[in-house]
Length: 513
Image (tube, rainbow, N blue to C red; front, side, top):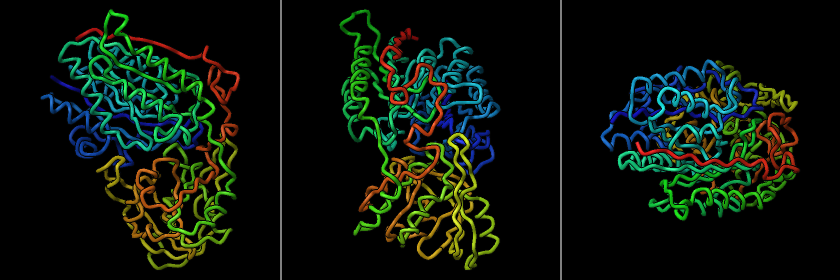
C-alpha cells in the first residue's frame, strides 16, 4: 500500500490585513519554503499535529509513505493564488504518480484570493486526478465544512476540543476509519448538516455549554459498529464567505436498512439543538477599561490578561498596544507582556545591544483598513534586558513537541513592564515563549498575552485570575465592526432574520474499494 500524507493548514480571517504568501507556510519552523519529504517528517512527525498521527498510522499499516509537503501558516488574510497553487500542485503531483490512499491534515477555514473554500478546491483537484482513491481528512474544530469537501472525500473528522489539545487523537481517528474501511472493503455514508449560525469564538468551546452537550452527543454516538465518526464544527466566524456555518458530520457504515441509517438523524438532532440554543453562542465583551479595573482589583497573582481582539491565532497582527497602554495608565506594574510582533523595533534594539537604554515606539505598525483601524503604538523609555534566537520546543498539551521559531526576540524593560518583542507572530499557548527569553512569568503580577482560548491549555493551570480584555483588532467579537457582504442569505446573529430554510444537508455514499 502506498499513501500520500500531507498537511496544508491555514485559518483565514478575510478581514485581516496580513498577506499570506508561500513563505508564510514555512515561518513557524524557521524555513524559507514549506518542508517536504524527510524534512517535513522530521519537523512535524513527532509533534502533536494530526499530521504526525496520520504518518504514524500509515507506517503502522506497513504502507509506503510519500510526504509531498507539510505547510502550516499562522492565521492571517487570504492565501495568495501562487502559494495555494504551489502547495496544491505538490499534493496533486504526488497523487498523480499513484497511491492507494490520501491522508490530509487540513484546517477547513482556508480562503484564497480566488476560492472561498480552499480545502474544497484542493479536494476537488485531487478527485479530478483519481476518482476512486480513498481520501481522509482531519479538520480543525473551527472548520467551515462545505458541500464540496463532503462530496470529495470518504472520511472527515475534527478536533473535539478548544483549546485544541486532541489534534493528534483526531489524526488517529481519521486514519483508523480509513484503513479499517478500506482493508475490510466496507462502504460508508457521510452525512453533513450545516446551519447558518456564526457562533462567537469565546462562546463555542466544548468545555462549556452550549457546545459541550452538542459535542458530547456526537462523541457518545460513535460505537465503531455502525457510527464510525461524528464531529461537531463550531465554524470560523471571521470569514466573509457563504460557507460560514456551524456544522455536523457523521461517518457510518452504509446500509440499505433504514433502521440502521443513523447519520442524517444524528446530524439533524445536534444541529437543530444548536439552532434552538443559538443565542447562547453570543459573547458580549465588557468595555476594556472595566476589564483592566477588575484586573487591578485582584489580590492574588499572576493575573492573566488575555487581549482577544488582536490575536495571531485568528489573524490578528499582535502589535496593537492599546491594552498595555490602558494597564499602564491605571498604574499596574509587575507586567510581563507579549509576544508583540515588531521586527522593526527588534532590529533597532538588537543594534543597541543588551544593557542599552533608549526611547522607542513599540508596535502599532499594522493598520486594519477593513475595520477602519489605525495601528496604535506605545512610546516607551526602557532598557534592552535580553536578546535571544526565539526558539523553543512546546511542552504543553497543544502541538506538543513542535519547535517554534519566533525569530530574533528582545526583552525590553520599561520598569512597570517587561515586553517581549519578536520577529514572528505567535499565539502564546505555551509559556516557552517567555522562558526562552529568560522571563519569569510565574512571578509576574500581570501576564498580558494576545490570545482568545488557546492560552488556557497551559496558563489556566497557574493563573490565579483570568481577565478577558477586548482590545481593538480584526479578531473582535463585535460583529458590528465588520462589513460582511458575502454571506449569501446571511448568518445568525449577523442577520437576525435568517432561519433554518438556509441550512444545507447532504449524504454521500462511498462504495467499498
